[in-house]
Every structure is written in C-alpha cells, then in structure tokens.
Image (cartoon, rainbow, N blue to C red; front, side, top):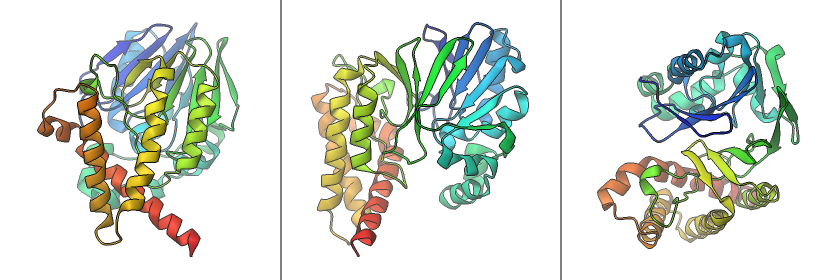
Length: 317
C-alpha cells in the first residue's frame, strides 16, 4: 500500500490506513519537539506506512512515546501489537475496559473471524498481536499525558462503545474523536459543509450516554475534531446538532420496526433517512454512488441497533 498522508498543521498529520477503500479511515501522528504519539493505528497492514512516515519525518522509533487507540475496534486498534513491537519506548494508552482485549486479543480475533470469515479477516486485518501488560497505561477519565510539554487528556466517551476515549489536544484545541463525533466522508461534503453520519456499530450503542458524551466534548469548546472517518472537521459547534438529531432518529427507526425481519426494516429506515438528508444537504451523488459509500456503514448500523433492541428487551424482561 502506498503511503498517503495529510499535514493538518499544529504538528498533526492524518495517515491514510487503506482500510476497505481510500478515504474511509485514517490514524494520526502528533509531533511535539523531539517526541511523537500515534492516535489510532489502523490495522496491521497500516503499520509499514506508519513506519515509513516516521522515517520520512526523521523520527526514530524510540522517539514515539505513546500509541493511543481511541477504542479497540479493529479499524482503530488492530495494528497496536505490531506497532508496539517496533516502537521500543512507547506505552500503549487504552481505556480500562479495552486493556484485556489488546493484551490478549484472542476474543477479538475470534469475534472478528466469526463476522468476516477467516479469509476476509486475514485480508482486512492480517493478525492481531498481544501487547505486554507492563507497557500499558490505563486511560482513566481525565488522564493527562505529557508529550514533551504538549498536554493530551483522555476523556471517557461512551455511546458508540463503552471502551471509548476521546483525546483532547490543548495545542490544537481539538479532539481526536475516534467514532464518537461521527463520520464525515469527503465525498459527501457539499457547499453546506461536511455531512455527518452516526456509526451505531455493534455491540454497545447507548443513545443516552452518547448524548451526554457529545455535551461533555462540546463543554471544552473545541475548535476542530480529528475524525478517524475521515480527517479534520472545523467548527464542531455547527455540526454537533446533526449528531444529536441522528441519535434520536436511530432510536425512533429501531423502535418502529416489527419483530419479524427487524434488522432489514431498520436498514431500510436508515437508507431512507440518509437519502433524504443528503438531498437536503445538497449532494448530487447518484443513489448508486451513495450506496457504494454507505452500504457497509448502514449494514453495521442496523446490526448495532438490533443488538441494542435485544439488550433493551432483555432488561425489560
């Protein structure tokens, strides 16, 4: 895979991970003085490109102090083990609920293999490698990390996943948001700005927690958000309202579906929601182009909402 990256200023670089397609997922390099940190990792197949960029920037492996996956979903953390092998002075900073999955990734491997099948798992993720426990820092809510005088703060941010952190960067006055501040694919941007989508990926969608998390992030008055999917968006105060509305719309769509073929009904509802919103947003893409960009996300969102309904019903019972 060819190295592709964008210098975003203020010591932040977005690295293309080449997961599924170009422009779907990125990870980030932060440079400060003689130190560096990586936020999200892509998969094991992304690691050679990360190391190539470090060499291009004149950053020795031992200068990378921290590897910080926002959460343990494999497009965000799948390359953690391989990177830690190559970065001898780095600590892995991960949400306390995610530590066990990266120090012993057997369950992650089994779960992903069950979803994708063994052949597709290897194609997408290659393999997951464990990280030694003594090299892990548990990122409790409010943990402050010093990167050669640059302050990074981990904030617990459930809603998409209960093992999710967002990383506040005081220098750029921005958050590295993983999946918490949604998705903004470049192809869907119009004159009205980025088009925001909500990833209710299985298995821990929590609408109430997600509303609270968005409020928590905005209380810091961020000027920009660094999304894994995809790259930087500015003026998040103009974008967050759409995410709050989508949380409520997802709940309404899920609750309106009958038990029979419920997941298909949810997906149909999501497709209608996004086609209508994209037209209002001024998108001129054809329906086939929209499906090409969003089919995987809509399938995962529908699965996540079905799991949420099952969990809700089990609690009621």
